Structures are given as C-alpha cells and as structure tokens.
Image (cartoon, rainbow, N blue to C red; front, side, top):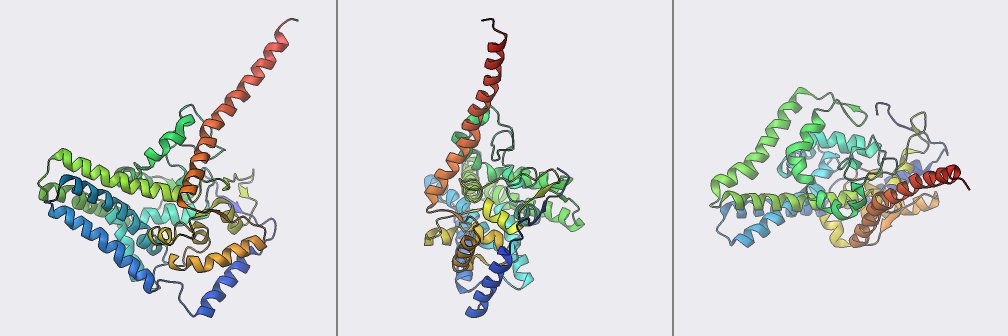
Length: 381
C-alpha cells in the first residue's frame, strides 16, 4: 500500500488525554523519573554481564561438548534478553534522559545480530503506529504465504498446518535477521508507509556492524576454538534457534492472541478509531503477575502499557499498568491479557489454527455450496 492510514477519533474519546494526565500525576506524586532507576540498572548489568561472560567462556573452550552446546543455547537466550531489557528501551529513548546513554545501549543491538537503525523504523515508527494493520505493520508479515495472521489475507492449503509448524519457523527468526531481514528492509523503497531515505552514515553502519557481528560470532570462534566445522555449525545454529524462538514467541504473544483485532482501513484509508483505542484493541499482555516474566522479558509481557507509553522505561509498567487498566475499563475499552505465559502460548496456538486450518475449511465449504446449488438447478427433476 502507498496510502497512509489515518486514525479518526469518530467517538471523540478523551481516553488517552485522561490516561496521560493520570500517569503524569503518578510520576509527579511519587517524585520519580520516567527513566531507569536502580532496579533497571541492575537488570542491565545482569543481562549484559551474563551475555558477555557466556561469550568468553565459550571462546575459552575446554569444556565438554554438551556443556559448550548448553552455553551456546544460553548465549542465544541471553541475547534475546539483552534486546528485551536494554536495547528495546534504549532505542525508544526510554532508558535514560541522556541521549548518549540511549545511543550507546542502542548499539548493543548489533551484538545480538540486528540493526538498531532499521529496527527503529520498522518497530518504533511503523509497528507502533499501524499495529496489526495488514499491509502497513510489517511485524505481522512474519513469513508471507507460510503464516497467516490476518483475516484480510487469503488463506492457502499449506496454512492449514501453520499451528503445527509456526513455532519451528519462529526459531529461524534470528537467522533471517542476521543474514537477510536488515538488508531487505534497508534497501526497500518503503518500509510500511515510510519512504526509505536513509542518511549516508547508516549505509556504513549497516555493513560495519554486520561485519562486526560476523567476526565476533563466526570468524573469531572458528579461529580460536579447537573444534570441527560441523561442531561450530551445530553450536552456532543452536544459539540462533534459541534466540529466534524466544524473540518470536514473545513478540507474537503481544498481538496475535484471542481478543486482539486486525482492523482494516475504510475506503478513504482511515481507521475509524482513535490511535490509543486502536492500541487497546490490537495489543495484549501476559503473565503480568509473574515477577520472573517481568524480569526476563523487559516489560514486553506488558505490551499494552508499552504501546501507549513507549518512552517510559519498562521498569515502571507494573505501577502504571493499574492506572491503564482502570482507565480502559472506565472508557469501555478492552484490556486484553492472559494470566500466564503458557496460557498466552495456548491462545496464540488457537489463533494460528483459527486463521489457518479453520479458515481454509470455511473457504472450501463456501466454494462447494454454490456448486451444489448450481448442480441442483441444472439437474432435471
């Protein structure tokens, strides 16, 4: 699509203005910053420190092959956790009020294989604006033709089984990101509705940081480690699969679960709803009462709060979540949440089945009925 979508507040809702006022009052009353506090800095040190420690332990080698494999898997998982807990906030400029800190932590995205610049366009601008709108939100274009997330898209035979193979495809997400996705997005004419007009320095940054990643995680290990090429491939793929699966699962549980909607623009190209109300209808939380989920997922289990207040550090989401939920209910807006991580996965599985197998069966039935009716009409009594 080339036409930009506009949000028209047809109901003249004051939801977001009211919510912002209440959230601002919370920070004023508590006399705290919207940015990182001591607990957030502890998380940053813990996840980045563990990631670096695992990396150097693997480079040192000398461990049992199974232990090395286990560390490679953990390295992939902690790569995702660094992205969730540090880079995500930094790229949103939510980690600190000091631009240099946000910029520095944004570059850590390169250590997990992704471009912070490309992500800032795809995620911060496109996804956060056009959430779950097919043809605009490229986050729901996970694997076109293989996975169907939106009812507006046609369904094919293969997608009948997407509830069975989708989770396997998610594990390939990081491999795609490292070797394909960033290049593809960067050199597209448009990303969503955004015209790709990149500063010249970003061309250098893209290739420089990609090479740095390839050096650190492919070239250097092959030089330093006393292992065979096939052992390296197994370890490298194990790291990528672990990181991809964690990233894929967490991101999909925020928008493709039961209760979330996939609005379609009207003939004028408008979404007849206020932007904030649209976010409430297309975004979901999970496991908000779990301290472990809150710690490792970097606030991405509270995507409702994140989409409404992306420039507030995720360490504050539990506190403002109560304000968001009560205000949403007051304005008769949905507040979609799954009680646990596993229940969210189950809900996502059912959505995959509904949008795949069940949609295909319904399509086949719809095609058969006119044929039967036509046959009855032409068949002589």
